[in-house]
Amino acid sequence: MIDLRSDTVTKPTPGMLNAMAEAEVGDDVFGEDPEVNRFQDEMAELFGMEAGLFAPSGTMSNQLCLHVLTGPGDEVIIDESGHVFNYESGAAAHLSSLQLRPLKGIRGKLTKNLIEPAIRPVNDWDPHTRVIAIENSTNKGGGACYSREELIEISNVAAKHNLAVHLDGARIWNAMVATDIEPVFFGSIADTISISFSKGLGAPVGSMMLSSAGYVKKARRIRKMWGGGMRQVGLLAAAARYAVNHNLQLLEEDHRRAKIFAEEISKNPSFSINPDWIETNIVLFDVVDRTVESVLKQFSENGIGMVPFGPKTIRATFHFQVTDEDLEKVVKVAGW
Ligand SMILES: *Cc1c(COP(=O)(O)O)cnc(C)c1O
Image (cartoon, rainbow, N blue to C red; front, side, top):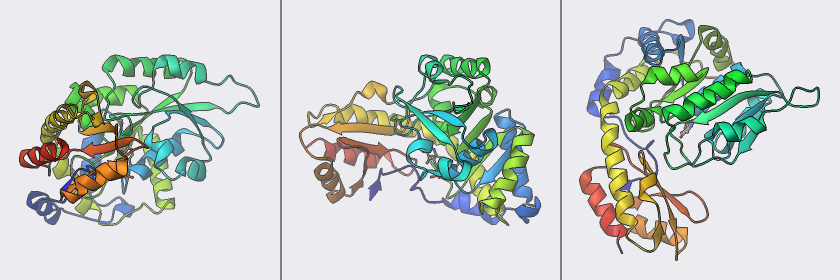
């Protein structure tokens, strides 16, 4: 199958498996896994943060970040299409007693003008607005990326109102490649960042929280409480480290293929899409005269996997295990 359902479907390559086999490991609950310690330090340094904490999933990493930034009853401002709001099983409410304040942004992105009026005044009866949570690149926003200027504005609003910024960077690598923004810049505008290695980078498992040493220390205990303390997890850190060092440079190709796909399907009147919106590896497109189910079925009968992403919307996601040959086939099938 040509699997465009998600960029999480990649399988470890021989080089990655080799890196795993060669990892020097120890018990990470004791803080004794050299591979994990080295990787956490490297990632923290890359993003200009004090410390990193390896986590089993992006969901846990996001939730750890929100947990350390807030207290019960606090409010988190987020775009209504945000992963934390839509796809984390209500975890912010359950694990941290948080209230999420979804705003209608633009392709998953918030702006200063949207955020500022949503910040609560300080009263006994108001929830405390504590965090602005942003996503870069956006998932449900179709892979859109923030510009440097947009991020600076958000960071300035946060500073002005004494709020924290959390950056869900599950696909920060795609944003880096698409916008040429250096990782330390993201560290400079956020209090906490969650990065992922199991999306387009192709590691089988793994995400990481990046923040100050104090927040990471606090999160380490919470991670244990939530069952995320792992033992010889250097095996996974080695795969993730290999992914950063070898697969990051492949993302540009995914973006190129996503763009070609978008341009090609825009020629078919059965689909509605603006190819100019395709910045990274995610392509969202609407069906015009057919149901999402029937279109997905037609793709699937031709060995192509995509997922429904709304009543009229389909998502196709490109990753390094989709080749130019695969793309050609997909384009052909989509041109009916
Ligand atoms: C996938 C994803 C996550 C969560 O990662 P998991 O490892 O699947 O828990 C968080 N945020 C965004 C934007 C994502 O796409």
